[in-house]
Structure formats: C-alpha cells, structure tokens
Length: 117
Image 1 (tube, rainbow, N blue to C red):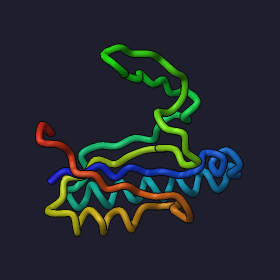
Image 2 (cartoon, helix red, strand yellow):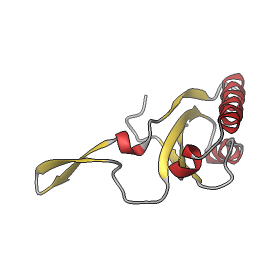
Image 3 (cartoon, rainbow, N blue to C red):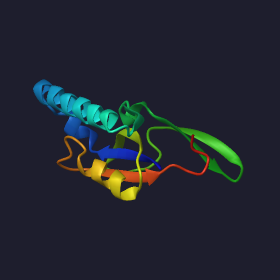
Image 4 (cartoon, one colour):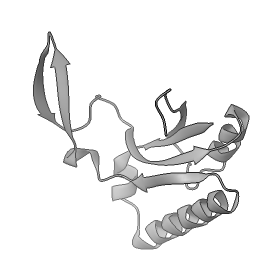
C-alpha cells in the first residue's frame, strides 16, 4: 500500500539553522532515503521550496481565485514528503517515527487515493 509521509514544521526553525546543522539534517535525510530504498519502500519524495513561494488556487461557487502562499494559515508548513510503498499502516508508522530531524513539527501519514499508480 502506498502512503505519503508529509513533513510539517516551522519554517523559521530552518531559516535560523546554522549551515553545519543544515548539512547534518540533509545527511540524515540522505541516510533515511537510502534506508527506504534498501527496504524497497521508497517511491519518491522531495523537499519543497518555502511556503512564501507557493501559489494557491481557491474555488468557491464554481469560480476560482489565486492567492500567494500556502493553502492554510498555520504555524507549521509542509516542508517535504516521502512517497513509500509498504505492507500496511503499521509499517508506514514505523518509517514516520524514524523521520530525521523531527524535534518538533509533525509527520502526517496519508494513504494514496484509489487512483494511485
């Protein structure tokens, strides 16, 4: 079954991080991706650009409008994701618990919809 591991955190934490700490976090994610690959679970994933670079299309009453920024007002922003293929939710939760550099924030585990490929 395929799951998205959606990584949420406060962008200000990343922006204030030292270059050495950033390198450490990237190294941890590289090792995590390698572990997922070796387990045959990794289907894809990516870091996302900061939320101030997002554009949202909102829909209401059959019409659309554009706005800058993320789709929701919140302290935590979606910073990246892993797409994994594992046996069940329990295995997806095991991987989520191992997410690197998560001293705060959240990892949302969401199954892909019926049309996933």
